Structure formats: structure tokens, C-alpha cells
Image (cartoon, rainbow over all chains, first blue to last red; front, side, top):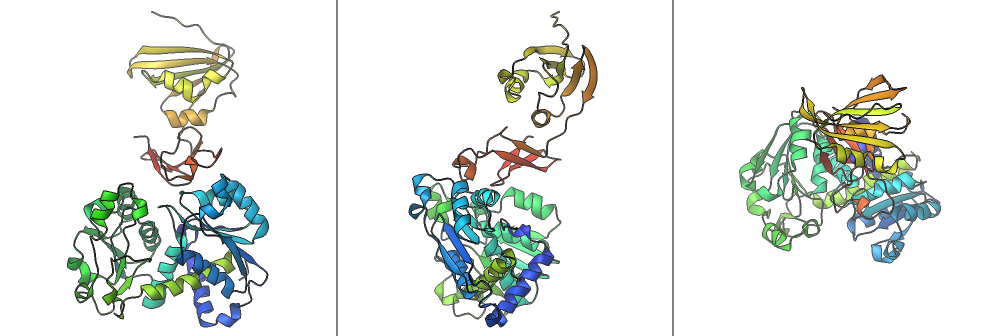
Length: 304
Length: 142
């Protein structure tokens, strides 16, 4: 039995197989519409999320399965003080696979160690969010044709943004990928990413503060939101939240085939006027996320 | 010159940094064992200037040397049987340590989950870096 805790749990080859499967699901959905008949997905969300939870639920429903679960810690036995280890043992008796989001980092790993069913980490604090990374990889591969040979700009909160860290780790495994990190000095990538991941693997990268200067060289611009919940200090959040706003003017500096991605939800770091630009791919990205989650459920349930 | 007698069976932990022996006494949980311990502090050493030595009289399978390797892998461990040194053990940084250090990340699941072991994994031997198994928070020894 396999779980998914980090995007690095899958080799490059396994990821390719997963993305091939997701592509096939997208192209021939009828072939997969009853693959999960009689199976149940439990969505255990200890902190609020609409997009990820609904994406998992939609994925399971489209495979013919059913879903149960809870959407906040208040509506679960966690409010009564039950441990994650105990909860997963109960859920294991009711469901065939579980997607878990938890504000505490490592909680899904604790669950996986006690579970009798596959557990998917659907986000644990500021640590990992592997299915978002799978979504990002799937989107880039589908729209660009490959995950090699590109310059990707990551902009915004690069310090606390877990999707950014996971995406960097996943992309360095492909050929000729270089990074441009655009952030205020306070939200730069952590030292361990810079030193242990990028420098150690001889990955070309640069760090800048101004977005305008680097727009023309980017093949992909990955925008992120400055997340209030990652700050202990409200003052710092207010000061940094509007540091970058992507608008039409900035987009005019970019290549004609550049892609703008965003893990969503956005607040105001991408102006709504950019939504109509054909290079804005963040809403398409959501759909790819559902297909890759369908492929993941099938793979972990060994129904492929 | 202060003299501490020979032990019949147990360990002599030599070449500890001066002043460290009391911490190591607690880290090895020697206070919980039914054995005699002699702690020699600030002994003269050609190599180190000053050093601490711990003599522990106990059956030789009683000590967790993995923990000692994590605490200070430069310590010399002499294994004593029938009053003689029968082995000099080399210590290594253990690949994994359990319940020796605690994860300090307030966002880590170890901060709330009942009776969950605090496990750290050696991720970078050159820099002696350990990371929490659950949240990957760094614990660096250098």
C-alpha cells in the first residue's frame, strides 16, 4: 500500500505515468467513469479549504465513487481532543482512501503510519502540498508540452509558500530548468532551498525584487499569495500583502507565449484585468488539478 | 592527584569536552539505571587540555550507544570486562534518533499528538544536520 506525503515520493518515471493517465482521463472520461464504483473517499479537512477538498470530491465522484468527511476541525472528533492516530484508524474502517488536510505539519504522515488505507497529504501547514505540485507539473506539461528547457519565475511569498518549495524540488529533476525568484527581502526563499537544493545541484537561479525587470525572460510566471495564516505578526502581513500586483502593464513586458500560473485563491496579486489575457492559465490549472487527482486516486487504489 | 578505582564491567567514556559529563549523564539516562557512576571533571589531557571522563559500572548491553554517537561522536568508548579493556568502540552519527531532542516547530504535529515519538533523521552527515521526521525542521549540531 502506498501513500502520498511529498511530491518527491514519486520518481520522474512514475510522475510521467501519472500524468499520462491524467491526460487519458481528460481525453476519454467515459472509460474511467465507473472505475471506483463501490469505493469511498474520506476527505478529512482539519482546516478550511474549498478548492482542494472539492477537487478531491469531484475527482472521486467522476470516477464513480462516493465521498464522506468533514470540512473543519470543529465538526470532527478533533474538537473533543481525539488524536490523528485514532481518527485515521476509525476512518480506515469506513473508507477506502483518505485525503487529509491539517494545520499541523507532519499530521498526514502520522496518519499514514497508523492507517490501513492509502492516505494523501492534502496540505499540512506550511510544509507540503503534493497534489498542488502534481497539478502545477501537469499544467505545465500539458500546455508547454514538456517540463524541460524553461525559465520559471516564482513571485511573491517564497519563504512560507509551500507550493513554491515543492515545485522547485520537483522541477530540478528536469533538464535545463532555471529559476528567477521575485520577492521582497523578507519573503526570500529559505536558506535550505537556496543552498541544499539549488546550489548543491548546480541549478541556475537569480533573486530579484522588481518583477518588471525580469518579465521579458520568463517562460512561466508562478504568482503566489502572501498568506495571512502563515504570519504570527499582523503588521508584517499588512506591510507585505500588496508588494506585487500583476496587471496588464506588466504583462505587456512578457513573452507572447508566457504562461501565468497561480495555486489560487488569489487575493489581489493578480489584477482581474489579466484574467482575459490568453496567457492567464490559472483557471485552467484548476481543471488539470482534478484530472491529476483522479489519476492519483486510481493509482493509489491500484485500479489502473 | 585524585584517583578513581577500576571497574569490573561497564564503560569508560573518555575524551568528553570539559564540563559536558553532567549533561551526558542525563542524556544517557544514567540516573534511571541501577549502576554506579564516577564522573571525573576537568582532568588534564594532552590532546584536549581539559576533559571529562565517565565511568559506568553496568552490564555492557545496557547503554544506548546510538544516543552517545549523536551527543558527541568524538567520545572514546572503552568497554570493560573483568577489569580489562576488551573493546574500543567507534561512535557514528546515528541515522535516526528517537526522543533525544524535541522538535521546536510550534506548527509540528509533535506539539499536539499524544505520546508521539520525537524522531529526527540525519539528512546531511557533513554538516551533522538532522531534520524532524514529520515537519523537516532542522536541528543542526554545528
